[in-house]
Image (cartoon, rainbow, N blue to C red; front, side):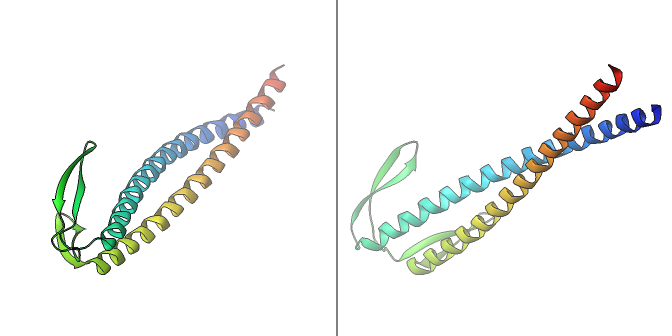
Length: 147
């Protein structure tokens, strides 16, 4: 009986360590999911803006957001030239169609990454739940033995 109690204590310790690790992993994944959601929102906004630009003609007056709910009024000199960021501070000029294609590809990649992160998060959440149930079971058994 003492050996069984020792085995339960060892299992509780192992589960406790695993649970802490899983909680840290879940927190990191949640941060990643939040970052991916922010990036998706940003790209979706950019894509919507490009859709609106497609409807505009040269020399159309527009309000361009500059942040902080502030805008600047501009004239659209060439609606088919879009500067697209490639990363690491590098940008390239593309046609409106090519820019939309680039944004669509990025949106697709981010959506896949988000789905993968959410799947991982759900798997970890399930492991956390089953680990918690096992800990509760071990504790209940230990209390019954001691009673």
